[in-house]
Length: 393
Image (cartoon, rainbow, N blue to C red; front, side):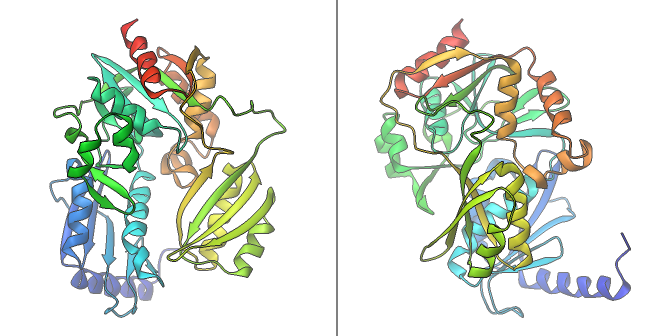
């Protein structure tokens, strides 16, 4: 790759200097081996980010990873924007800025982490035993984790299992909870909602409001539990079609047409919301299709706000739960399905050369002494009983 021209370097310096003047409020953050500096023209935005990630504050050391959030349109670009990596991402719909910037900043930081394997999963401890609970969205992962905390387990995360590559321990990721209003009802703490703040349609609160002193340190991985909806049919090699929702700031007919041309895409639809659009895609091998959709959107200046893999149906929690042992290789496959960073991961691209097989082998080696289970979703109380029985055995 050719080095940047002198003109390009000068232009970048001018833009960076201007952004720095427009964003006087700063927040230093550390996520494992990555340090970031978040800047904004709004102290309120900085305060919100600090509220959710107050346990991740850094000492303010200078960082090459800088994010600038301008919430007002009175800037040379004439729109609210997020700037990082030398790119300006402006929004035609200002109401999306806070949620968009929050998600994009976090994803950009975590995709650069090399020191830990990051898996979409909850982690709690019981005594000295670490329990990882992995599941897709809407499967009750957070609710089960909070019920276990209410019963005396300690908390590492409701969202991210951060597995240290050097020490093979699960490390805490205790961000602020963003939970649905009925979650507190399900765990028998409805009054706690009165002390919670609402933000982007969910309650925002700290786990220690549920049980003070419950945040734990790094722990060995003794048990891995994969939540499964028992009504789902077993996957077969010929049944890999899945639905995904691509949430974007806007979508037009040429963008949809370009997505339809991607190999493996079988259906494309569009739902228009008041503040954003949802491109609904059904595809074979979504792990290969999602990067191509992302590239199409980037080429057309469409901002991808989130990508959600949709279940065929949402599970119900009124059944009798059942737990059974599974093989280590099956557990590794389930964890890798939920590997954070995806094709953007610096760890996958640069340290594993893009090889998911090498990633599989390392993760398998790390969890070789863990007990692995599949838990069919059912009654919350009974699921919690089954998980606690694992730690008691």
